[in-house]
Length: 407
Image 1 (tube, rainbow, N blue to C red):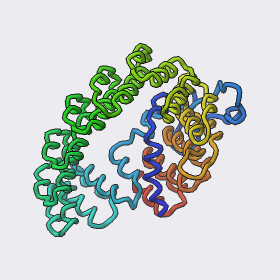
Image 2 (cartoon, rainbow, N blue to C red):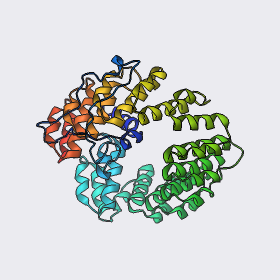
Image 3 (tube, rainbow, N blue to C red):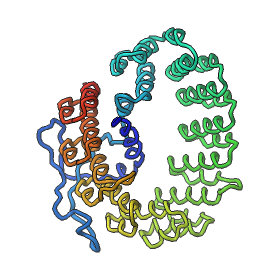
Image 4 (cartoon, rainbow, N blue to C red):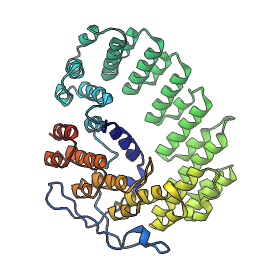
């Protein structure tokens, strides 16, 4: 039951990339042999003790070249936890894609492992031994793993066939397969994913749903930093706010305040200027709450001033402090993130990101939440190929899986 939390933890912590991208480096060296590791000192760097004054002079840890959110493909599969069905599918696809049946050994004994070995050898015969939805699912998985659209022709259910073409189109990076999808909404999503992967704005124009189309243009602009893509946003449904936030993001990435003047929505335009000029009070001009939070976070990181976060309250304040700690790779700042019930940020989740980014098991020992602490040691052991760290894991099933993942 406890392992069901792992995927949610990964999704929550892996979604924020900005913090890792803005990390600072220092003399603090990190070793992964389990003997000695230097970590940032705590003294004088707890935010609760610095209200009303700026924090400064803190040492930060040298960032590991492969950040927490940048996981190798096979490791990304294993991160899903030993009992997660999607992990099996993920490893099968990786084994077939890399033509490496040995990857199948990372799957526990059973039909999944057998299918993996056969698929890696281009053998789909195991699917013929199944019936109903199991057979359909087997065929679909083979088609996805082999990027073989012909397998989708064998799927009789229209909605499942659509899903099959969608997954193969994504795997092959072939938007022409989206045309084979019957359901218009699924087809629109297919074109959108294809466009975003290829940074191809012309594919966005193939989307019929106006909101999805504009979201496609905006996402490409966010990924590329190209403000010209924002000009393509149009229509009757919220196109003004879509375009406004598109220019805002482009302005922030390029530090080009003139792009703020292209925003028709005056409140978003004010927000844009506030973010670039480091004016936290201007952030509160936005009618959109999450934009206010993001604006404050951006300024606090850019100005190296975590006290900016104190302008927020509740979970958004702790989220701001957490992302600041991540951006500076300073675990001592995490000590000011209050433990909370529910889904908000906590001291443990804050430390987890930094410990894994730096492959520092000493930080895992600071965590007082069993599930996250075990996951911290699992991740470091798997990424560094150091199975001895698995011995720190209390949960027996996860410890055994750690030994498998780190071998």
